Amino acid sequence: MARKRKPSSNNTIIQRRKKLKAKTDNQELYIDSMQDSDVTFCSGPAGSGKTSVSVGLACEYLMEERVKRIIITRPVVESGRGLGHLPGTLVEKINPYLVPILEEMNMYLTKARVENFREEGIIELCPLEYMRGRNFHDCFMILDEAQNATFEQIKMFITRIGRNSKAVINGDLKQSDLGHQSGGLLTCMDELYDIDGVSVCELDYCDIIRSDIVGKILRKLHEFNPAK
Image 1: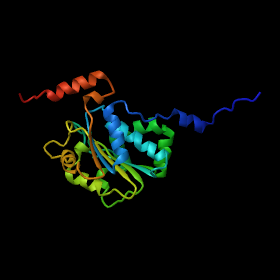
Image 2 (image 1 turned 60 degrees about the vertical axis):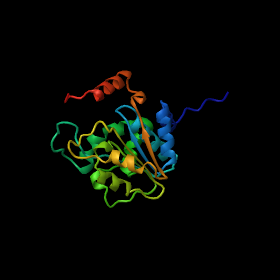
Image 3 (image 1 turned 90 degrees about the vertical axis):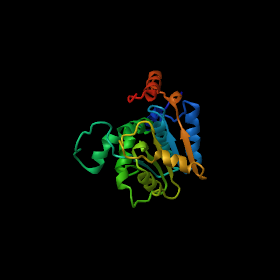
Image 4 (image 1 turned 135 degrees about the horizontal axis):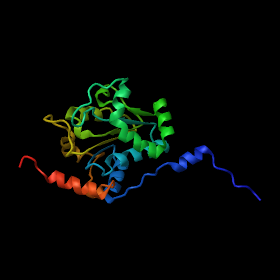
């Protein structure tokens, strides 16, 4: 009788990978838009999947060799009171801001694979402020927390898109940490939605999948105006 072959460790890793699957109708439209468009803008409240879904699709594109690299960036803007000067190299300084994205990647690719890809430069964490002058070909680019990016920063990010690359720009329009400074996400969404190759998606409270209570609380707080 033939003995069943024990799966290799590599197969085990692949089997443990989280698979991208839309959990709401809006998330399904978001995935379709990213696949069909060169540039996709997405707004939505915390927990609605705007980051998780885009990271999941980027990981799928990488594993299917539809792109050669994943580029992740976000504005380095602190929420609330700052932590002061952060020690270390440039990558070490930006790491705390990108922990949520790395956690998502670990689920889609496994932690070991993410670490290997980062060492090889296949996954790059790049501060938005340091992207000027670079070109990204055959890449899946994600600008996260774009509500904290200025109009000029978003325009600069878009102009970094190279051949055979996709760009996703997402953020929560109701959670800006720019203070009195004007953000550029809403302007770009309003002005670019009718360009061929550009998609604009909106996720809502009904798309929040962390916990039902999160959507209820955020909806109530966003209706609340402390100035009244």
